[in-house]
Image (cartoon, rainbow, N blue to C red):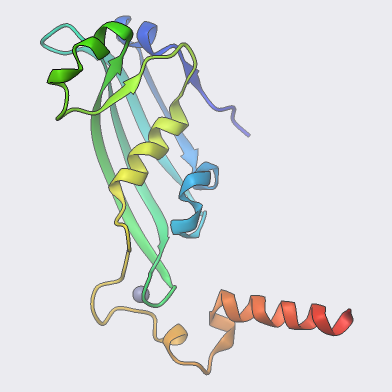
Length: 167
Ligand SMILES: [Zn+2]
């Protein structure tokens, strides 16, 4: 088990620090509704710095793949991710300047910024709202009604049925 890394984002950015690591997909609670399963992990790299206007930023890349739930066949859809983002740290001063940052991503600057949560934010933005396999690529095992073993919902229904018999 690795602890969730917390950074003081202003200090991290002004010192030009760098952090790399990986997050188990099972840690992404907000993502769970979109997932087929929580196997694997995502790699991230986060680097502090300043932009051309001397504003503090966090550059972040997230790579790997997650197993999304296909909305058509409820099968596994392996979704590769390669996200690059450049987050502006929003301090009180930067917010006053917010008129000019409509087109940019910003995060509130805090002394205990949860890096995994930043990674999850980017993943949530990157995945499709209703992920589906390409046309004709859906899993035939779930489409056909015969093979109940292939469907997690059929297994759940069976379990519920068995429980109701016992009670
Ligand atoms: Zn599908």
